[in-house]
Every structure is written in C-alpha cells, then in structure tokens.
Image 1: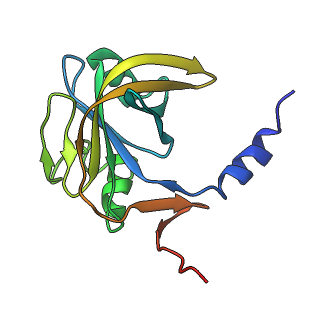
Image 2: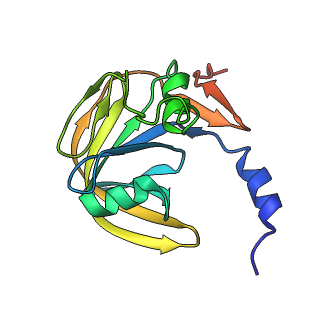
Length: 163
C-alpha cells in the first residue's frame, strides 16, 4: 500500500533541493529542462542520477542522445530556472535563446553553473518517470552557491554558524 498522493506531494514540498537544468545535444536534438530530482549515486565510478518525466521532450532527447549534462544553477539564476521550466515557452519556444552557454558533446553547460557531463549508463522506469543514471565524464566546478527550491519558491543556501 502506498501513501496518499496529496500527502506525499505536501510532504515533498518541505524538502529543499538544488535547482538544476538538465541539457542534452546530439542526434535526437538539443533540449533542456529544469529538474529538481538530481543526486550523486556513486564515487566509484563517479555517477549521478536525474529523474525525468518519461514522456517529456528532455527525457526523449536524453534517451535518444545517450548523453546529458546536469547544470547546478547559481543562487541568482531564478530567471534561468523559470525559463527552462517552460515559464516563457509561449513567448520564446527556444529555451536557449539569450542564455550564455558553452557547447559540449554532452549538452550545453550554462554560464556560472557547476556542471556534470555524463554518458547515459541506464534508464530505469518507475511510475511516470525515468531514473537516468549517468557516468560522469567531466566536471566544471563554478564554485557558486546553489539556488534551492522548497515549498513552491526559490531560496538561497546559507551556512548555519556553529553554536
């Protein structure tokens, strides 16, 4: 038996997560989307996972390209997060328009983002989402404080001083 859907959603709104944009490029096309479900998986070998809605453009492109890039956004990148979440798609359908990127064979790296370029190792389907496991091939550590998301809004992360 599983928990009630609404109770699950309300509880998950209390969990803070870094805001990431997953990008990809290759034979299946260039795509990008804001994603909240991102995690390290293993250090041996270095690997990460992202969860993508299985019927979304980004999931189809990642599966087709076999590569992806996870961009951890800096704390002042709210507009970029909203753009790749589709907030401006009606005015500008190209989410990369006007966004400073460095193109790689894995997908664009967004300016000032800490980025993990990955080859897609495997995809596990669960419910409405694909869990995409990637072997990390490269890291671009921007050294920026990350943007976070919790309870329907963006937040900045600040260290708590030891007492």
